[in-house]
Amino acid sequence: VGMSIDPKLLISNFPVITGILALLIFGKTILVALVGRAFGISTIAALRVGLLLAPGGEFAFVAFGEAVNQ
Image (cartoon, rainbow, N blue to C red):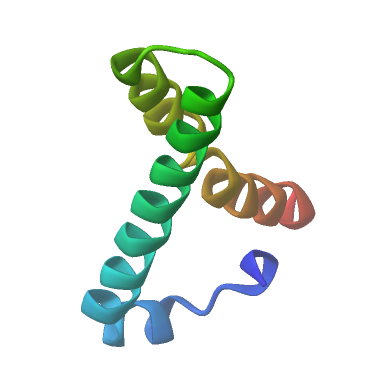
């Protein structure tokens, strides 16, 4: 999916894509934080871990796309 990004389509749908991406990252943050709490991590530490790990998957699409182009 991320390996064949069309810049024109991205720009024309930027607000929708940004909103969906924010919801996805927020959901993943909450999920990781809940798992952290289930394993006994403090709430603050669990939220920090969630915020650090959640965007990683979205960045991988960009990195893989760039690798294919190279």
